[in-house]
Amino acid sequence: MHKGMFTEEELRHLRSLDAVERAEPLRITCSKEFKREFMRRCHEGERPRAIFESAGLKAEIGRASCRE
Image 1 (cartoon, rainbow, N blue to C red):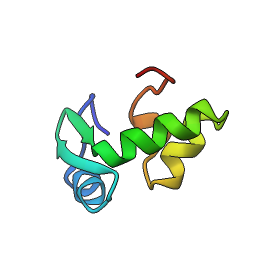
Image 2: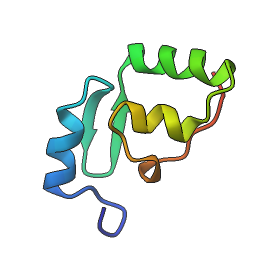
Image 3: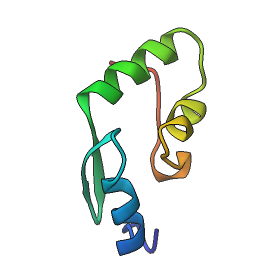
């Protein structure tokens, strides 16, 4: 990530992930399935960072919380 924007290499990686519905230079949109899975696992006590990393996402690309 350079100056808040994803590089082309990062965008290619993000677009290859099932957890990502759309990836743009300034933001990503996670799939509805990933969002549901994220919430379920978060409410079960799993840390957001671990959930993101298990989906192939670097936790540094965004902030996560257990909100609906």
